[in-house]
Amino acid sequence: MSAEKERHARAVAFREITDSKGRVYRIGETDRDLLGYSRKLMVYLPWIAMMAISVSEYAYGSAEDTLSGAHGWSQSNTFWILSVWVFFQAGVAFPAGWLRERGILTARKAMFLGSVLCLVGFAALAHLDNVFLAVCGFGVVGGLGSGLIYATCINMVGKWFPERRGAKTGFVNGGFAYGALPFIFLFNYAFDTSNFAEVLDLIGVYVLLVVGVCAWFFKDPPKNWWPADIDPIPSSRPLPQASGADRAGRIPVHTAGARSYAGNKKSAASLAKNPPAVRQFTPKEAMRTGMLPLMWITVVMTAGVSIFGISFQVDFAKEIGFGPLVAASSMGVMSVVNGVGRAVVGWLSDVWGRKPTLVFVIVVLGLAQFGVIWAGRIHSEWLFLVFAFLSGFGGGAFYPMFAALTPDYFGENYNATNYGLVYSGKLVSGLFGGGLGSMVVDAWGYDGAYALAGGVSMVAAALALLLHRPGRTRVRDVTPNPRPISREMI
Picture 1 (cartoon, rainbow, N blue to C red):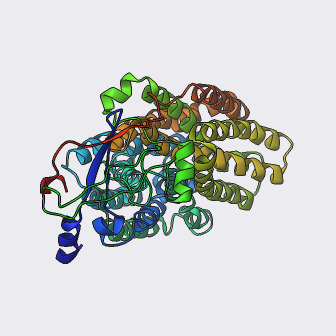
Picture 2 (cartoon, rainbow, N blue to C red):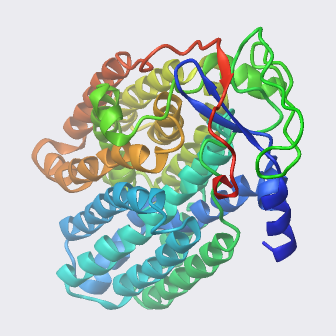
């Protein structure tokens, strides 16, 4: 941002209003006042960055055979490398959120650091034959890098769109799946032991450059910020009017009366189904509600089923006699639908409500696992692709639901940490979805493993039915914040 734009941002007046439950809303500043451009850029740039890092997870299964042959690894070795990657990709979300909310690590620095770590991860996968070193390089370092980028992108869009986060979060989250599509076909048709190192090196550079350019524009809004075009609280009373200049010498903000979320129609409709959290919950407070631990358990189970499908679908297709085109296409279908489904379900949750949409998605994921077994038994390629479609849809769409549900329940101010805790469930699921999943396949075969995955998903859907918003959500009284406004508040 130029110095002129920064001076303009500092000159914009704002007012903080407090509802009867104590939640504070900072109103009066537009996105252009704070950024110098539309907040839509805080959707498109995270989306591009998410597409760049998607190759690490969603295309990995298509590269496993070549990696095994090139480095002399067993199938179990390659599965555990991905499992460790998932563990650290998910595990870094909480500490990264803690550092960000204390101002130690800015969004921009987190993205830059993540891009460098991803480059190191791909270089390790390309040049290290030793399994332990490859696990440390790609699994640990690469996982940390991808996790920093993922968590920063998801939290960024949630902060800038507190009134309509479902569709926006789903759109950004979708890039993490279908961004891998070109690499899935690359790994199936033009990736072999003669060129694998060069290809992986180039992919690392690609991630570094794309994420680095996007990171340059990343910036968080002020705490408690609320968009100026919609009233934050449904009420028949007008919001407080100001007269004269505020104590910092700026022109005061005048706000319109708030009547059933008056303002932008789409935002108002979404807020009617998904009202703001009653207050800003710290991580400890969110834990004490019981809802955050329940979310975590549901993520563990659902993400485990999703990771299992990503890890084994191509191998299962080859095992039952389907050709490489069907195997690659099934994973390509899963990747595309996984990503598009996230965007569609994000939009749907703004219309239906977050919890009903989440339960629907998890049920679809569970049914798809049983469908894959059926398609394999009757050797139907088209049915296999259909259930790969449904598995991809369910296996990705629950992620943006939790990403949106967390600030819906606990607020935006501590969302980087709260969502980091919820998303950390994936680090556990990565172990039984990938590494332990391979053991179940060895012991029970693919039919037994897919049946177990379907059952786990159904249990997760039942647990999701128990979720509810902490505290009352309908707040009708609004009073001005008695605290004076100072320049330090900007």
